[in-house]
Image 1 (cartoon, rainbow, N blue to C red):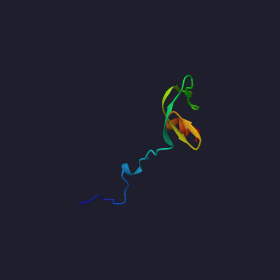
Image 2 (cartoon, rainbow, N blue to C red):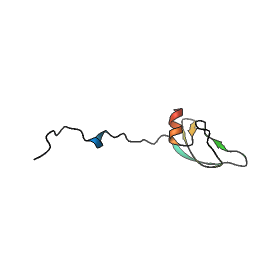
Image 3 (spheres, one colour):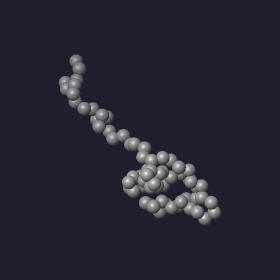
Length: 67
């Protein structure tokens, strides 16, 4: 015997897939030039940030807030 309703959706079919927004960019500050996230004000001297259409953020979540 098979399933009663073959057209029924399975719970795994409705999951929202996370899409990558922007590109990952390496930041290396020189001297006192720290990167300051415009969304959450996080600061770092070296690390990665996300950039898309001239806007950037320290994480994809911060970038999505600005878009």
